[in-house]
Image (cartoon, rainbow, N blue to C red; front, side, top):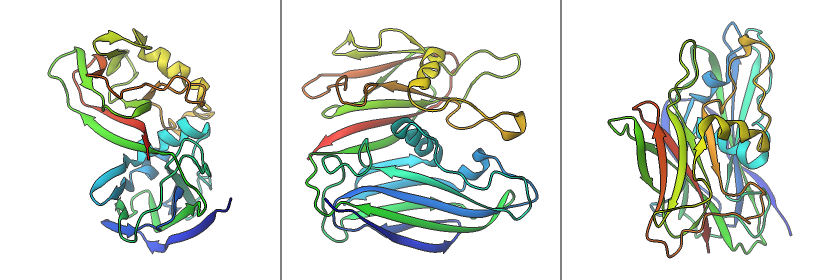
Length: 298
């Protein structure tokens, strides 16, 4: 097997824009999106850095394969790879250069010839980056995007990752969300708005369960704080040594994980089902970010 690691965006000056990039035609394992910039006066926080990449989308002739906000991509990288994305230059010096890299994965593992994007014709596969010019906390922004191809791969499936905003249901209590049918679901990530704070212990989502054809399956009553606690199985859960370091993403994200052993043994099967529902018991009447990770057979 071979791989080819190449540049598809080289040293592009940061700007407020949404621009398309044609991707290579050979099978693709993943993309690496890196944003460089310099501190303005003090060290900026991770949350401040992430806002400069608004969203990342990959489309095949109008069909969406990948669509995430930067915070959700960060959380997905933590989930899949058991590590936090690389952020360099962790010092509070003015004009110190820093870089943040996000991996855009098309398989649960990198460099997997069986699980990656297949070959496409030229012009059929497009990456869209919605960016905001650096400023206020970070300046001198430079964007780089690298692509890792697997020229000899003949994949059987690829990872499809889609974010949806679940609107506020209009009340607290159960909110029934229809999950997509047809593919095996690897996980659902839920990013809440309301979280623990001073004199506030109510979560945006208090608990979840899964209904397959109206019968409970795998998650019959899972408390949100316990699902967040189970992140210990996924990645480093520490949030820095001092308050000034800020809360590290994905602080408000929990994973409804159907692949806890990373071998596909427990994937949520949806093919042939009439309905698959995620029941969110809402502690607060508010919108929620929901990301679904599906395996699409080729």
